[in-house]
Length: 232
Image (cartoon, rainbow, N blue to C red; front, side, top):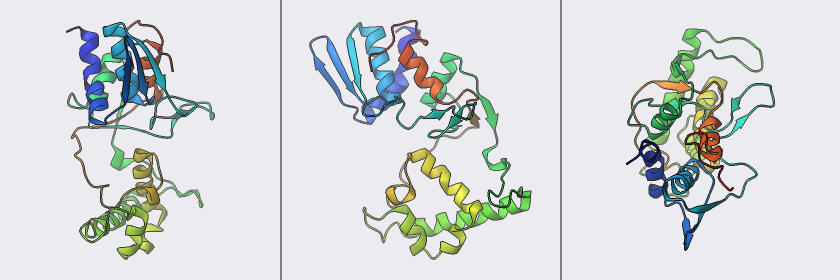
């Protein structure tokens, strides 16, 4: 198995687990969805199998929940913002490492926090107080898992838990925006019952100074393997 093939296997596995639609017609293949799993699957099919592949993407960009905006003159990640669990068990870390994409390790729990209205920087104890209130709102939602149905959303769950006042604190809302950014949607669109399903990978947190979209660009443009650009 070539090094290039091994590099794509982790994300190709993700595409299988996500039931990524892949349609075939002879040697022609259509991959439905231009997220990172679709890009990885298409790249491996082109580079390793020599297939003619077309990716169908509904948006005017590829990347799925990975979206980097440069309108301010520097990259700002609007979707995936940091790499959690940066170690070999993480398929995204493996791909970034193989592509040589620069990353910087950060302590996500020790970031500077500013009040957007007053312009005042929160002190360390104030940040910790905000995190304590955030954990309280999380615990309140977790306590309701058995009593809510699959149609209940996370925003309503916070209110029903009796933690609305805590939620309105801007420090608490900052923490909850990380959930919205991770899932690419607002809290009312996130299931209160299924949000907690899943497992995390331990390890440090890393950010991409050039933007998370570098992973998608490398897959789409063929920079990772010297292959042709993907047809999207």
